[in-house]
Length: 86
Picture (cartoon, rainbow, N blue to C red):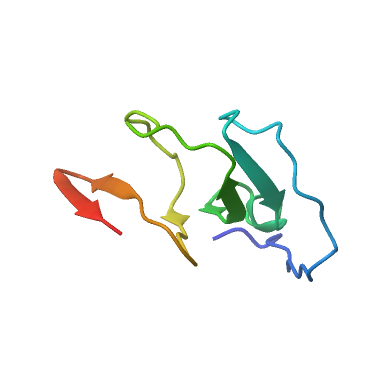
């Protein structure tokens, strides 16, 4: 564990939605967690603008922990060898 892990606190309005993420059909709000944990934990808010019907394609997130918290809609995730519809 890093001794220099920081505390991250983000309130509504602290950060803006940005469209400069990995996918042009999503908007992202950075919550500061990735920077605070030196990339070990990924946590940001994501919302779809015009999500493709066939999904994003398979990809990998290199982190020790990844938070997915959905408020509405659905997503199909692959964890190891199991497809999960959320």
